[in-house]
Length: 194
Ligand code: ATP
Ligand code: MG
Image (tube, rainbow, N blue to C red):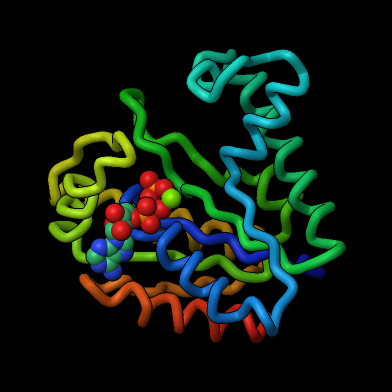
């Protein structure tokens, strides 16, 4: 199956996805024509245009089937963008909810996006807990290091599932404490090869 020029980046909240992506994009800006999209932003834009929500917080309250429809339209929009340039998608494979993990990349989403690669950012669970606690710009859910560890293992399983459905390569990049630039360098190298 032919893949599109799309690289999906995932990892648990606070692991450093945005930090690593932005670092890598700075490194390749003169060499690669690349656009960064945040999946949640694309969904919000579609839902707002259709008059379904006035802000992002209302998204989670939409009926599940409407959310799934918006999720699918976002995937189709991203697939279209990739015709013009390489697209890096910042997203979550699994979202922690009181009912269990919500699947961020279900079959109909990845079959529309057909990513060439999926990059999973990982770090030490205790360090991730520390990063969440220190980052006052965001309000992330509380999760103890054991829970974060389990969440990361589930993300590996979800990433392999994406690879199985699409043929995308799956790459794990460690974002070691104080070494975000190193992780960004590894990701930048990968972007140069897509
Ligand atoms: P979310 O999924 O919630 O958007 P994220 O994975 O994008 O989270 P970031 O916002 O990039 O995470 O990073 C979370 C916090 O951790 C930020 O304060 C960031 O500066 C810090 N951080 C990122 N990478 C590292 C690192 N290697 N060492 C120490 N701190 C880091
Ligand atoms: Mg982020």
